[in-house]
Image 1 (tube, rainbow, N blue to C red):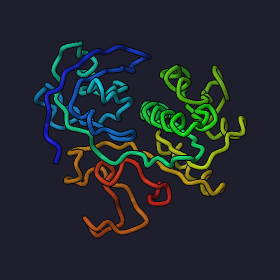
Image 2 (tube, helix red, strand yellow; image 1 turned 135 degrees about the vertical axis):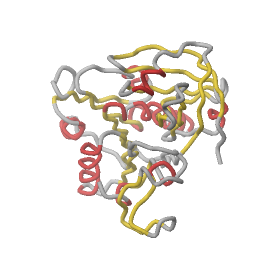
Image 3 (tube, rainbow, N blue to C red; image 1 turned 90 degrees about the vertical axis):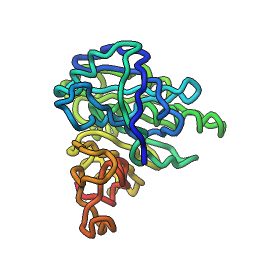
Length: 264
């Protein structure tokens, strides 16, 4: 079982309206993989439960991870005030990340605050592509969906071919990530996706129609973050041996699942 750790903030900056990027020096970096998350504890004792935040980037040599999060409540508002040198209590890495399919042409799809985990996955796939003498711009295709304001686009462009969809049409395709995939004729062998449920539901349907393997990362409010409290269950196709009912614990069994494993 993971133990609570007192880590150090290396840096923090605001990269969009209410969106912050924090680099943390932590033991979690040694074992972390794309698609996993950390749980961050607040200093305010009135906020007992940790906040689950997906891992954006991992630097094992420097023992750092980067998280990119949106301020949505008191816990993340507290986090946004942290500065370099501040202590930060956390547990991680937690959950199961993406299962990389080497040699398969990948389509990475992120929507909103589901975009950050795609950066770490794109970096992993980029490294694999170069190792196997493949062209990352063809091997790694990334579709990012925004309301309007963009973030993390440079990091994504550096690791693959980036297509953008915006709700207002200010950049890229006007509409959804599925609209962008169709408009740009994006093709691939495996889909990796993270974002809001309506987006994931549409991606699952698209993957099934086109017979493409699809791995999805679910976002959910969590309590313990380690699978003990059953606060973050989702409906599953098969019975969970832990509860003997048709559900899976997003924090423990996920957050990444094969699309056909879960009901959305």
